[in-house]
Length: 110
Image 1 (cartoon, rainbow, N blue to C red):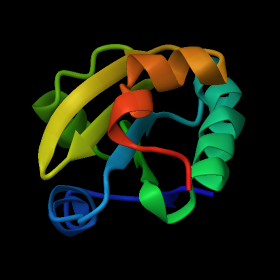
Image 2: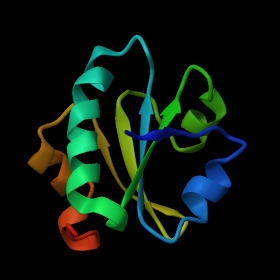
Image 3: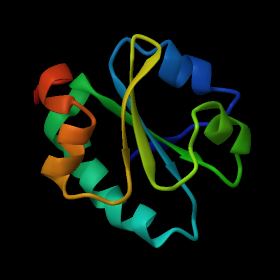
């Protein structure tokens, strides 16, 4: 299960993370967001400590969504070494999401 992050802890949890982080920008009312949640859980379980997954509720943190150009949800952004690297928009099957985020190259399963 992914941790929720806010603008207060985003720098520590995401930008300063030593491991790659997938940030899931979502909202409670978003049906596709609920569809992609189990896919992200499967990725987290499969990759173990090699990757971290966190969630940003765009209704509670519109500033973070704006800062990273999120205009449609769910949007998942892979951060590595403090930089946004790859992004995926919309609910996608696991393999497609992994490809969109560049996980095959960046983060090997543990």
